[in-house]
Length: 135
Image 1: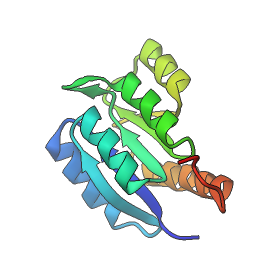
Image 2: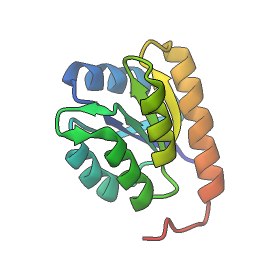
Image 3: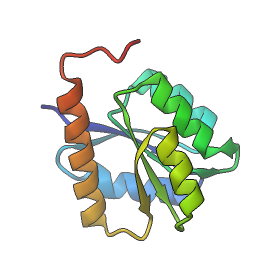
């Protein structure tokens, strides 16, 4: 099994840079792209076909829940992991209904985040081996 391909989507450049630096050095994870907006994320999802999309639902260009829904529809085998600054039960329920597989707070420790991403990515890769994503 190869590296787990991760796309980072967050409206804050510093957060994207920090996540890229922290996750990109870890064995088994490969940061394939980073996006600041939902529209940019949708374009990158189609071209990069990541295994995991790390998504902050609070973006300047609109509705992160809809971005999550569209990513899940475009590449059903990709796992969308919401990484947000604060807990909102209504938002959590909406993104989970929209296709996210996890809702994590940004205060999560790096070690726990890496463990979660590896577990979710391995699950995705095992489920999708030899399968076409319907595209």
